Length: 109
Length: 387
Image (tube, rainbow over all chains, first blue to last red; front, side, top):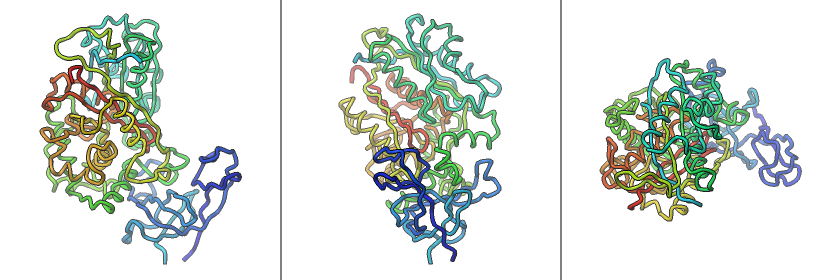
C-alpha cells in the first residue's frame, strides 16, 4: 500500500501542531507556523458521502469527506479514497495520497 | 444597562417571492413592525440589518442604508451585520445593546435573504462562503456534509436511530402546517423520510431545510419608553453572542457546538434562569440532526437524548418543552439572514398568546441561531413582563 505523509503546521516557538492554514499559532500567537510533514496513520472519527458537491467538485461526486485524528497528535479533514467498503467510527486509517492539498485516507492494513 | 423590550414585530411569508427585490421584502417586514409598535418612527435611533449573502446572490449590498432610506428614517446609523446563518440573531443583539447602553431609545432590527431565484449550484457555492474555505472548503465539505459527519458520531455514541431523528422532521413539518408564514409544512411518514434520496449520508432529503426568500423585523424600545398596549410587555431577558471553531477539525467534539453550549450558559446566567424555566424554544434546525444536537447543547434535553425526546413527543406543542412550534427552519424555511429575526418574531407572537400554533401559558421563550461550522452563535431569551 502506498504511504503518504500529511502536511500540517508546527509552531517554531511552542511546538503546537495545527492542521492549518493559519498565520499565527493558536496557542502562543507567535507568527512562527512552519510547514511540517507527519506520519499519515490515524483514527477515523467520522465521515459522510457528499452526493451534491459544490460546482467546482461536481466531477468528483459522490465522494467521502472524513475527519481523522492523526497519531501525530492533530485532527485533520480529508477524503476517503473510496466511498465503498464498510468503515466504522474509530477505525484505523492511513493517508495514501495528497490531491490538491487534501489528504486522502483508506483503511489501514 | 437599561431594560429593552419588544414593541413591534413584522414578517413576510418565508418561501418563494419571485421577482420581488430583496430590499422590498425587508421594507415590508420593517414597515409592519413599526406600524405594529405604535412608536413614532422619528424616535428610531439605529437600524441593524442581518443579511448573509445578498451581494453574491442578488448583486445588492449596503442593504441597511437602502432599507433606512426606503422607510424614510432620519439620518441614523444603519448597519448591516453578517455572521452566516446567525446574521439575524447578531443584528438583534446589536440593536438591543444600542438601547441598553443608552445610544438610542428605539432601534429597528431587520433580517432578510433572497435565494430561490438562483440556480442550486450557485446557492450551494454561496452558502459555502460561510465555511473557512482554505481549511474545510478544499476537502469538498458542504454544510449538509458537516451535519452528516455529526450524525454518524451521535448514532455511534448514543445509539440514535433513523426513526428517532425522523420524529424531529415529522414534528417540525407538522408544526409548519399550522404556521401561515411557513414554506413547506407537511404530513410525513417515517417510511417516506427513510425512502427519500441521500444527500450526505446518513442525511436524507427531508432532513434538510429548503432555500427560502423572506424578511422579518422587530422594533425594540427602552423598557421605560415602551408604549402601553393590551396585555403584558415583552422584555429581552438575555442576548448573548459567542464564537466557536471556524473549521470542523477545530471542534473538540464533532456532535456538539461549543459556541451553543457557551451562549446557552451565559444567556441563562444573564436572565437569572435555568433551562428548566424555559417554556418553549425556537432553535436552529437547519438539518434534523442539528435540532437534536442544539437541544442537548442548550441543556433542554439530556446529552444523547435529543432525538429520543422528539420521538417521545416531549418537544411537540403540548409536550413538556415545545421546540420549533413555528415549523423551524425545516418547515418554515431558512432565508439565511432573516432566520434569527424570524425566530424572535415567532417567540414574541407566542408570548403575546397570538401564535397560530400556540404553546399554552408561554411566558419565557428562548431562540438559538447558529452560523457557519458553528463559528457564530446567538442565544436570546424573551420574557413576558408578568412572568
